[in-house]
Length: 418
Ligand code: UD2
Ligand code: MN
Image (cartoon, rainbow, N blue to C red; front, top):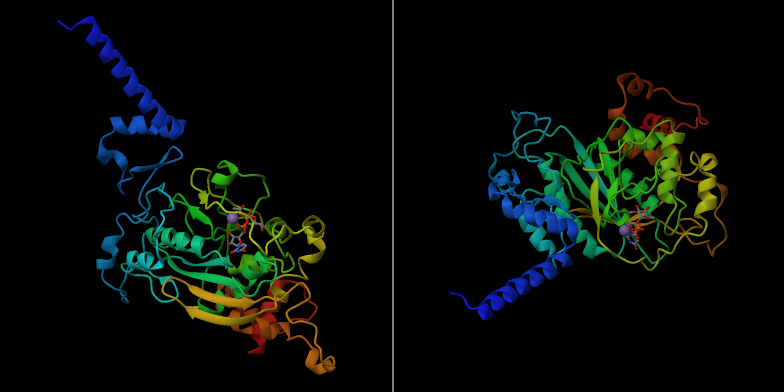
């Protein structure tokens, strides 16, 4: 028989253990607690194709590298390769995202053996259906870039894309200009390959679901619809910040992005307005799929809030055709094909222009003339023109009146120069 004393001892022990367990679980938050209990009663093999065995804010997420290793054993490119399937067999849904300390670029490289110089990749076992360039505006965020590369490379490989990653690095200490860097990225990327979609991507946003396909829609796509920083909801209807995707023609139709938003804020809304001014609309993935985690950070030095942003935004309707891709002036300082990405360091100047006011007498009329827009476009055009419908490709040969405000007209001028 158990004595009354030992009964009490067992009861206290039981209550004590319960208290400890409850204290531990409450630290993880309610949703995690629920999924913790669900997992206890689930068999391990019910976590899906990729061994999804982590949780992020209540959603079970898998290892972004799971099941990719056998790709390295696949036979290499040949002429007889089949087209990749419409739906990639590697896509599995939620991805677990965390930021472990001690991650190095060497480790990211080791985990991505099929990524080649400049951060390019093509599926080894099939011909990709889509060619996507990722454009990342950057200055002094190497720590974030490392995590983005760690997640983005396998994420894009899961989707069987032919892709390339471009980091556009603003040189110098002058105020940061995110949108102008995107214009640089567009032009430089299109010079190199015939990309059919460009993803404009903040360095600190990590996608949390591989069903968020990095391909373009028939209209400009806002991919970062649900971010942890906004409680996984869209903050407002016209929001276009974080990650967006445009085809070269979408980009040209809206004259690219503005060049004159220096500092934090406003440029994303300007871009959103341009979409509708150019007669297009914003598409989005579902809230379930377009999920992102933002690496926490403070406002950077050299990226103070732009006090002029609201005044500028009020004038987008008047300015969008005069300021954008057709007027983006910059100097490329270096172009490096690094193992995991292409790094392009650029001087994008200051609010006063690309060069400081000359100390010597001003140049003569002929010297001071800006480069003709046609010349500016010429090297980019060979890849963009292929995207135009056949009828327009032909009409590119014909000369266009100089006053034509449509950005496609600039394209045509450039082409006719060659
Ligand atoms: C929001 C938007 C962002 C942009 C910005 C306003 C989100 C998730 N993103 O970002 O798309 O509209 O507001 O300008 O809501 N960067 C550097 N170095 C710097 C400063 C900025 O690399 O010194 C780059 C980097 O890619 C960064 C991006 O610019 O992710 C946006 O800047 P942010 O992260 O400081 O601004 P944030 O998070 O408020
Ligand atoms: Mn950010």
